[in-house]
Length: 477
Image 1 (cartoon, one colour):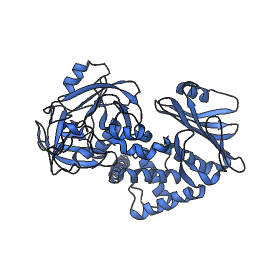
Image 2 (cartoon, helix red, strand yellow):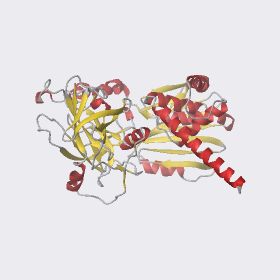
Image 3 (spheres, rainbow, N blue to C red):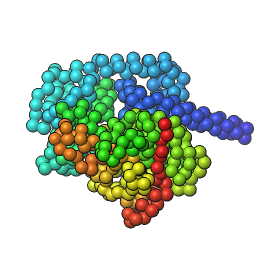
Image 4 (cartoon, one colour):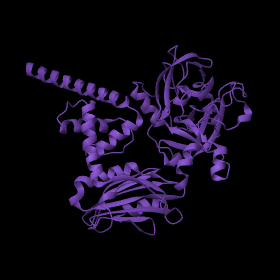
């Protein structure tokens, strides 16, 4: 009996110790900025410790990768890397990067940006769908492709590539609304494919290699997959300057005549007093919004709710959490659980645009998800057709059940776009995916609430419910 008690106490202590290490690792990971988190995950891919999508988010697989790296290098396995451990990670990860010459390339023919092992290939040759790279001995091959929907639809392309054929064995096949992945063996050779879905076509790459290279090519394939993005040629640099964050212009400095002269996203902290939008996310009065709305305010006031204070800001993802000084709230938003965002689905946007002109009235607009990515193919964002104006920044984007799927962040500046593209854009607005906000909340020890209702609500009902937790944020400087 005594031995059983000892075993039970040992197991209990072990579980609590692992949980403590996990939470410590999570806190350490989220203490670093988004670019640093991305870099760490990429390095762990190249050391062979991380085997999933590089996204800067923490979870069991990131924790497992960190502790695996520490174990291999005889460090304490707590999932939080000391500076000397980070240096070892960098040296080990960059060793493979240098050996294969992994670098980012922009390919105008296919409209792709991707990382590839340039040292392994001879000069590429054009194909009907893109380009082909080949190692000098033919043991590694890379093909890029761009397939127009009118030729083969996204779904038909996936079905064709996963159809059983002699000599082809599929190990992995995953399809989502915005991309699919297929991997396995073809005639005894490993292969990996990732294809993105865009508005009019499918773009991606196919990589094959002899089994003798598997020790490093598995890592290279995963790194290539995580680096894949849309490339728009010469517009690449100029498009970044066309995105405008629709927070309200500084009060007293601009008038309605300024039109689209809003600050570029994600610039933190307006110089004068300004206003934006937000939405309550906990019963303790926590409010979600954009970092550029509240980042450098001397004081914050929530209309009809009182004073608030900044809890934390994630400048890389332009997210922020503030909290009412009252520490309480009756109504709060609920996030959509699991179901992916779909192009064409209806959405509703709430916020407080043109506060001075519209007398601080809540605005409710309707539209659809028009694209599953933002500027330069940024998968953290999605595009909506619902009208967005100065003051909407930080407001909620809701689906037909009233669940939160995004946070308003920016729109295309009309006059900058006219200068570059020669035309005025209409209703091209962007939102940050709700998953990023819920992950940010969890990193702060806050528990997001998820919507369990799947029935569709009327727009009037959605407006009525959302009005209870959508707030106007006043930034005082």
